[in-house]
Image 1 (cartoon, rainbow, N blue to C red):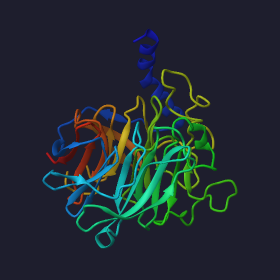
Image 2: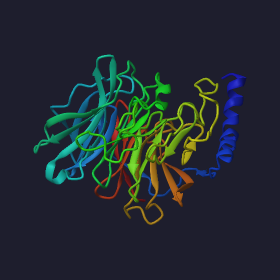
Image 3: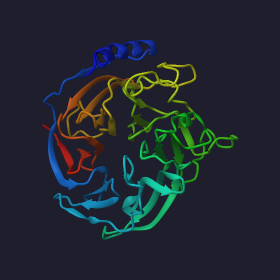
Image 4: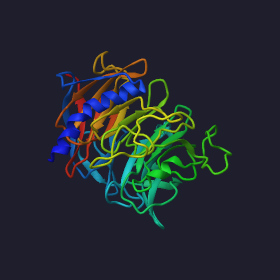
Length: 379
C-alpha cells in the first residue's frame, strides 16, 4: 500500500466527522461485538449465492442469483428448483434477486420477485408477479408487471428490493447501473430511482410526478445509487439503504419527489481516490442521509425487529447486513436518529439478506458459493 493510500485511510474517520458536522448529523458510537443474543444457528447450507428469503407454509422460499428459486424445508433440506422462473441475465451483480410474499398470500398464494431482465440493448431490473403452486413445485401465472427503462449493457447496480406498503402498494428500488450514474438526476428514466407501483405495475395514485411532462409517473424519489436493502418501519414509513462508492453508504427515508443527490453529492469518493460530482457532501435542494458509513460496510438486507424474542432492548432496532465485513449491524434509534451501532455475528459470512420470520426471530442469508440460511438465536 502506498504512502498516499495510508494517509487517505487514516483520514477517513476525521473526514466522516467533518461531514457530519457540516451536515448537522448526530455522531454515533460504533461499539465492538457484544455477547448479546448473537448465536447463529445454520438452518440450511449449499445455496448458490442466495439473495433473498421469504416465508411460506412454514418453510423458506429462497432466490439464488444464478436464476433459481427453491423451497427450503423447515429441517434445512433443499428442494429442487421451482419451474416457471423466467430467464435472467445472470452475471456480475445480476440474476434472480429479491422475493416477497403478498400480504394476502394465505388466500391468493401471490409472490413478487425481481430480477435482471435480458433484452434489446442489455438488461434492466424487472418486477414480476406469480402464484406459487399449492405443492410448491412451480410458479404459475407469471407476469412481468414493471421493467426498468432503459436497458443498459451492464452487470452492475440493479438495486432490486421490494416492499409492500400497508395500503397495498409496492416500492421497488432501482440502481443506476454504474455506468449511467448521471441519469440518476434525470426524471425521464428509471435509473437510480425508487418507484411506487400498484400490484398490477401501474404508477401508484398520488405519485409526485404524475402528469408532469418529461417525467416518468412511476418515480417516487431519485438521486439514488444502488439500494440492496429496504423495509417498512413500524410506523409504516419506507426506509432503504444504498451503497456508496468508496465510503458514503447511506440510510435514507425517501419522501415523495425528493432528490437524494447522487452523483452530485456524496460522503464517498471515487475508487482509488478523487472527488465525485461536485465533491461536496451537501447541497441545497438535495436530501441528507439519515445515517452514513465511512468507510463503507457494503450494506445488504434490512429489517426492523418488531418482536419481543430478544428482549426489550432489541425491539424497534434496525438490523442491516454487511457484505464487506461479514457481520450483522444492530442499529439503535432515538427520535428517528441513529444513536448507536453494535456489530454482531462477526465472521458469519457476507450477509446478503436480513428478515424477521413469522416466529419473531431474525434470519440471514450469506452470499457465497456455499451460501447459508442462518437463524439468529436469543442468548
